[in-house]
Length: 304
Image (cartoon, rainbow, N blue to C red; front, side):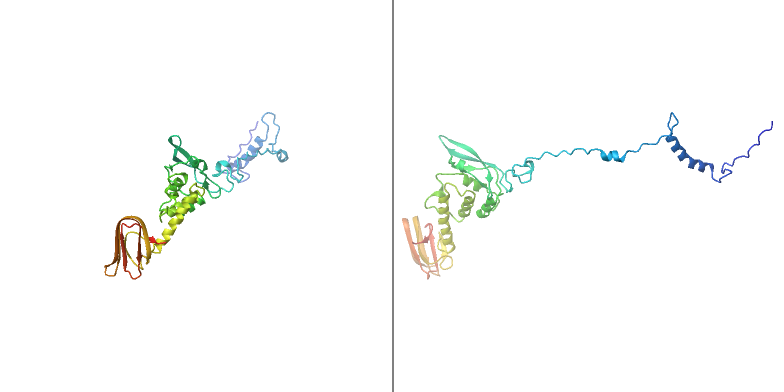
């Protein structure tokens, strides 16, 4: 039996029919082979096709229902929920003072104290002291500084002419209803320093039980301030006539040890007067006088 011819040796670098390397051929066939194997059933040799999701099935599915969030409480209806609203009861959200406490001395059957919480309300931002005034506290105080927030408080600070921004004293004035209040005395005239403070308090509590008497004391005081500015109201000391004080007839009352003198330009005495005690003292200062001097005579004001 003849043996088949021995094939020539295969060149490891090239095959005999394509000129491609064996490794390149295998590289091209491998992906196709793997794909074919993947599409062949493992057990029965039947070819299967990978399932593709149906677009129509997906489109026909019903959407999930959307749950609406529960609305937050907003009792003033300003669009801000109460938890984030600084003024939940005011739809205009007007600035109001943070509540603070006043401690007041009151006289009932026995002397005691009461606490009152100051709360501002309304467009002007004023506190209602009616309940506290009914107890007639002699004096009130707060331990903390109070800085203006409302429009009324800001106006009161400006009127007071205080150096700082603390208006707690104004609230203490408003809260007290002292029966011995000096400002409520019939003839009391507020000084130039007292006038702005009392006017500021009246802005915070215009309905105070002593409000009318306070206004009268301020009015009398303002008259004196105007007279002093004109050089027609002055006290002890030496003043140039025509420059610091005006010539005219002046009086002072209820004096002890009062001495005055009219002087010429050399410092000499034109006229003088002394009294140990008097209910009323009067002097006429002439325009020709150079200066007028007085001691322990109190306050000189124009004679009526």
